[in-house]
Amino acid sequence: MEKKGEERELGMFFDGIIESMPLFAKQFIAGGVAGGLAKTVVAPLERVKILLQTRRGEFHSIGIFGSIKKIATTEGILGFYRGNGASVARIVPYAALHYMAYEQYRRWIINGFPDFGRGPVLDLVAGSFAGGTAVLFTYPLDLIRTKLAYQVVGPPKINVKGVVSTEQIYRGILDCFSKTYKGSGLRGLYRGVAPSLYGIFPYAGLKFYFYEEMKRHVPGEQKKKIMVNLVCGSVAGLLGQTFTYPLDVVRRQMQVQRVSASNNPELKGTMGSLIMIAQNQGWKQLFSGLSINYLKVVPSTAIGFTVYEIMKSSLRVPSHDEAVIEVVTNKRNLHS
Image (tube, rainbow, N blue to C red; front, side, top):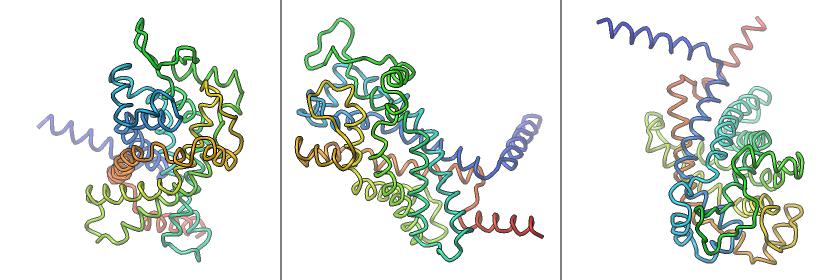
């Protein structure tokens, strides 16, 4: 009896905390947890994809499975998670901002432009602006993650064929951040941000568009089922990524340009870089790593949306329509 009483008191304590939290804080927490969990699950695939995108000679020629084998042989299991600390440090605030900003932009548009409607175009616009907002605030961490993942470090005292020993080695997130800032200043921390923004606006918008549009055709009682969210999230991520992948390749190559020992001409400007990569490396390079990205995007987006929905339910975040009604009611109460 005493134990049950303590559990009841603890439950009431957490209920009080949840009830006292503002809506945007709940959405922020839900998004952060969803993003961090999804990113960690697919971290090994992300490492291989970056090595393929940035044309590391010893990896580009051996393909996906050869790259996986090489990383396992030269760096061990932990090699698949090189740069994942920076990735999670970036994705948690990024996903938190992304999901929260999407919900906020969606409500602001509905309240500020009542005639705009609540169809899929609303999700497209809100998702696009949310993606841009999240990128601007967290981009330096994405750049650091890419530089750390780009490094290939062999075991101590072992001469590994194909590993470039003369490249600059970053000892961790703070060391990479410090050296990048000292070398190029704030501009260096935002190198490649333009293609990121060009890519995230359509990708984030399309991702939310496809996800919400698919869920609109699901019966009300089925919408909260995990399998439904997994399927809708998978298709949404797959379709959104396909249209914007070349911009992701440009971004990665710009990010590691100063680290790479390549003699390729310097990439300048998003469109110019797209053309230069296609001319010098072939148009297929613009889609290098896309197959493994599909393997990554499907579980990542699916897990992200599903965990977000579960967290929203746990934190008692109202549905889109309920949230809008709540905001409108509060405004009326203020003016009455």
